[in-house]
Length: 300
Length: 338
Image (cartoon, rainbow over all chains, first blue to last red; front, side):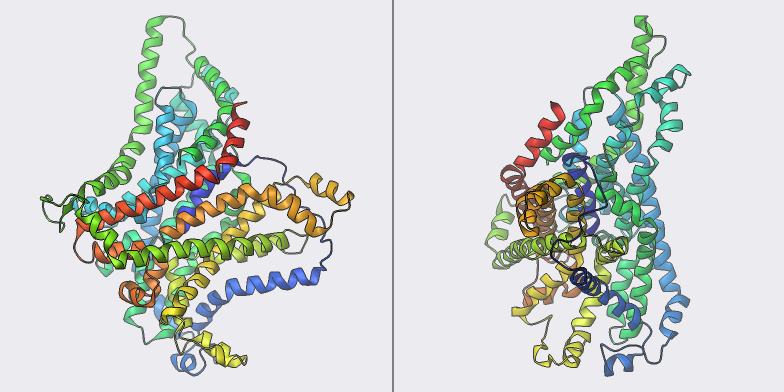
């Protein structure tokens, strides 16, 4: 549900919230001294990241350390767990599958979504409203609800245990949010630019390729990040579609690994923390875009 | 859902009027009717080429499966060949009378209600606090978003290791002198649902706080200044100005939270699994669907559960939009059209 929520939130808020004035400065606290604020903030952050730190540090310990003192710190620090995971084909195979699935899904979502959003935003025709409603209604069909019949469709297509069987539905389910984020973006491109392009003899398709794609880049980046992280973290679809370990993506891999090595906690923790690393790195690089997008940077 | 759409189009409509002018101006050699007709045919072709792939994809993999579920739901079918064993509404009757389904329904609604009650007030308070001038606000925003970015599988794996009987949580409690609070967090049926609620709150509250912060940022500062000049206290300002103006954000967050709760699957499935979640009292509708549908090989029955889940979500969403979101949407629509 993680990504779905983030995405559907966009849809409902970009429109309903006024683009009103946003200021970073707020009044200083009236009655509360700052120390209290800092204390609560630190406490909250501590609660938020303690489990993550537990996972990462746990990977640096040995099993006997973990058994003796489950909540303790690594003493001494052991890197063997991480090195073993990093040397294993299993991790890298699943990593490669995850990257492949996420990249292909993202590219598919962005390309198809940009094309159809362009039509909805810049062409005038009868079915335009219906088209938009179709995708907006798609937000009501989260993957979990459609998963059983979706599995049957994928099975009939012979794509069970095939990465394509994960990629294709992910693209389809990623489209509604993409359309809903990108349409206001494309509408906001000034008509003067399109007219100027038309006067210079550029067709509307040429305008799309040469002007729209570069101009909508911020929206495209936001959509891409959400799609990538959504795909990276997707669990339920791969769970239904992928059977053999060679095809597992990381979420399935983590689960399989942790049930297979349920007695080797340290190893599981090392595997888990390496599996979450890419999403975290990706997020911290593009954090401004995501949080910025959420705080209203995406305006119609 | 169509209401959400309403706001969106209403918002976009401002620019639409002008875009039509731009559209008309596009064919530079317009006057002759023949060329205009040709232009329109060309436009149709462009529309078809650009929107076709996305629409086909969407119909084939989102709409079609859902329609298929409605069809399979009337059959007893094990997933091989064409369904032939028509059972009418029998699957639905079985679902609704199955005590196990009533259990998961109860859990799902409980999770929905508790999520609202626990996360909502906490998120508002934290957002109010973090909205003050403090150093390192951007770092704080990243860090509280971390649980939300990490996948459910990792969250589930990490927490289930920590919460085991001999895990880190009990060890920590022992070390800080609260040994009497040690518990069997995951398998005690009285406790498990609260453990689940704690993990859910941990995972999703960052998102709620970020939303609330965004909502707070959009409140014009003049209002606070004016209230201050009138001598309002900090809490008076929060109660009389901030909370009402934060209303739309709160209501939209609540909507997302409700829909998310009704579909909860990953966390429960990873931490408790199909069987234990039943005995620990944490299983949800989606878990029931997987267990009774695909895992039991009853695809007809599983499809019917999907339909029931969809209808429940739809009804809840419609009721919510009708009675709670109505005010926000009306405002948004008039704002767009007038």
